[in-house]
Length: 309
Image: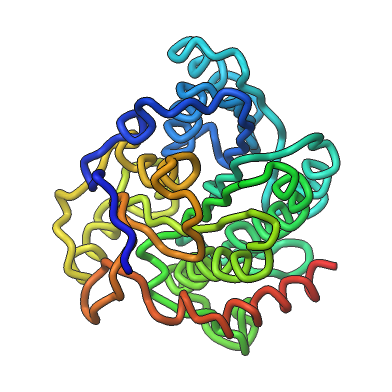
């Protein structure tokens, strides 16, 4: 049965968490100093959670934390350095984490950037959007298990419709690099992470779901002109006027992270605060079958382990 809620594309993060008390709960939001990450963190803090902003830019993180404290009155807002493209940075974050973790929102990411590679030779979008979050998530497993009901939110995108995982050449070693295909592949990986975490960790009381936040104008699009984005949205059948505010874009993330309406729900892909339907060819809504494929999810997990150990 498809999971539905009273909320929709126009709902805001604050509305989704109205009446929800997160006192005593701890959350990590990657990319918490920009875009929907700010509003995700703000809504969780506004409901009483202890929130850590995991960010590359500490100065921006500190300013964001001050702003969130000022608007929510919750002083339990912290800042920690995390560079998802740097595995040493991710492992350092994991080592310094102490105690249970109730909500992990894997929100940060890069979009459609020119070809770049990490020192290991990994394509940068895949290294950041998937490998970084994979190491973070698996590294925090014990903290999540200790929370007795932890939730993982994997922020994906309708961009996943642009590409499955190309297992034979994930890092564009033998094929021509195309920024949107690389982005799409990494966003498919975000969904598959939730699928496989569900299979492996359900016994630990951990749930994991993926989310399409919607089209929001943020610095995520810094490598892409608005003309390019609007052309792609037209090509995929979406009206270019359907932009969400950051507060609306964060709504589905906080719904999955903290709403009692989602207790026990796991391994699914949500958009506009409801479980998505299967994608119909020629549209940019719904979820591709390959993004929920359990065999692909298990294969990706194993490749990630072998690559990152």
